[in-house]
Length: 485
Image 1 (cartoon, helix red, strand yellow):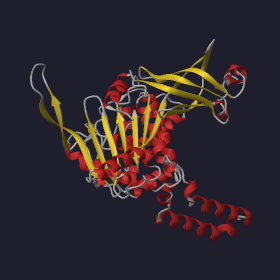
Image 2: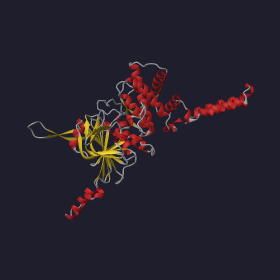
Image 3: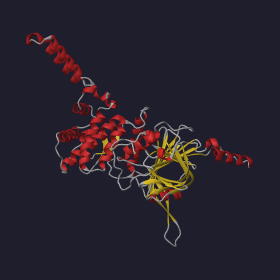
Image 4: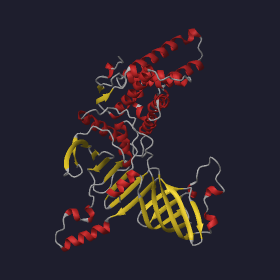
């Protein structure tokens, strides 16, 4: 459980936790150390744990030395059997740990190591039973004091140690004061709140952090599978950037599960090209619509915790922070992967003109094969190749893009920009940082978003990065009005 004081310390990189008993065990067997210890945040890089161990369970200490000492070769991954799990009697835990250090002392051992994420699962049931009994005695029991209704609405709360940019449409009261004077309240437009069919979404920000909450509207027991991952994927799509969380708290029934994670804030994840740049509150309805459409789409995948489209987007958003050359390498390739995704199979159906044209060619060749001396084997091979051209999985990317252009999904400008960058990079050409190449790159960014708009059935405002000044336009209404003046 994290309180306000912990929150401030975590943000500063100064958090620490004293435990009366910590245990470190090797996964899959009984070897381990236990004793009092401390977990200390090392700035904002990682958590260092120190165990003052008096107990050694399992085999002789030499057999407990880390796998790396003698067996692991350069370049070899750490096997699961050689990883460790850390637990504390107070509920904190971390798994998949390695690189531990053991310092043997006369009266015990000091074990140190590092973790990047800690998890705490707290069950409020007994606490609430006592509260419920107390209220029964006082005959003032209310619904909200019933243990089965603790946190009756399952929800997830994320905390980011940065101020995220989103189209706020609600004011937030802020308390301020000048030394020696009374406190006063001020209002700032720093919150956004809306509902999807199954969730209530809340975003609000202060100077140094942002809070993001997803509340279930349709269940009082358990959250949907994958919503923890999907809610972050959805936020990243709407913000157009990678968004690493620092704290995650999940409430289900009487269980409160807290995760704290170390994010390297020296890496600035602030380079963003959202589908719609959020310049004023009038953009908020379109932010909501983008969010709803994307969330509904990715939650239709009941197998993968991370949707395939989110994986492509993740690669693209990471490239935004690595500069121009990384973007021109990554963006066209990820779009190519996106187009070969099964979600585009329905789009790849050949249009009537292509089918009519191929049938006409087949008929012409069939009538002329005797005059031209074409053997049956050659004619059969020809027919096979014609059928091959009509199979969706065999369409080339330029062919798919041409079909999508004809179906008014994308425009000619952005299709040509993809071809220009992709072909030049495929032939080893180094693209210089010129206005023309920047224009191509921003047009390919628009192409990416138009493809996703089509998949999720979004219609509304978007930012046309392919036009100087980045004007706001409407998809698909303004699709053919895109130009570069």
